[in-house]
Image (cartoon, rainbow, N blue to C red; front, top):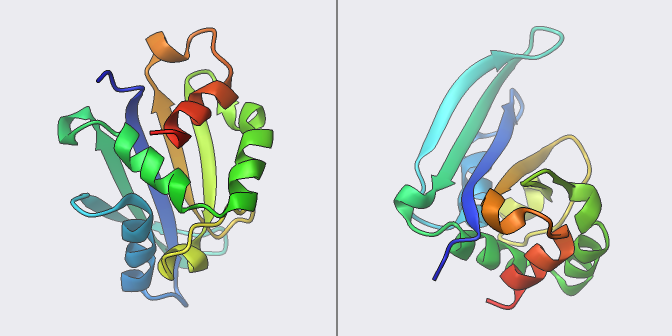
Length: 145
């Protein structure tokens, strides 16, 4: 089986009023087990402390297609429809952008969200596979796995 995805990057911000463990749980629920996380500190626009939690799933840890397929399958029916309707807007080159509701992800329920306080995901499709293809067909292939 040829991997369609080269890597998946995920990121979530932990604000001063949030529990880092809960935000990490949201990422774990979205990405599944066996993922390594990197935690860095930053400052917000007004000097407020922000912790950034990142994870990268590449081919070295197996085929990232499984993680993406699992994640898409966890979306509700309406969100999967919305994903298909907006697939072209979410694709830039070989990159596909998703934002998930952080609170829902913590509870184990994946929901698309366009807000600012989200789990951000960037799916990097293999350029040889993505070249000349529309985003909808690439996502459809992940949905039927």
